[in-house]
Length: 136
Image (cartoon, rainbow, N blue to C red; front, top):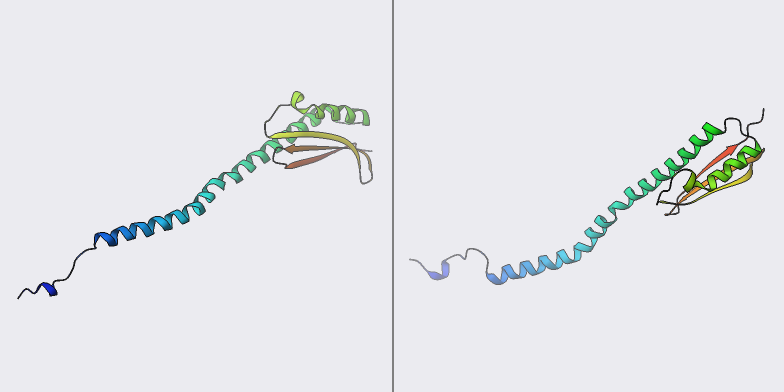
């Protein structure tokens, strides 16, 4: 009654399990660089945001100093302020993410005297502000 040929096989053979693991590991090895590159670059937006925040804080510090000490600027006080801005790290604070602070006197539209302040980060991002002399 019990015919050995009619018995159904149950489970997997050892060779089938080994082949499944080999194929799975090859697929995982191919997919790993794709997922790791995304994980490694996920911190980039956070770093850029921190650098932008440092640029904004630096410019706010300069603006606060300008508003406090130069309420009615003239050409001479604007030149004195430009010299102070050029020495940014000693007059305000030093930040490792800031590369360069520039201040140059220029002409903006019909304004004959204006001070253009540029702050550059180590990533090359820039922030600008123009200080002018108000004419009555």
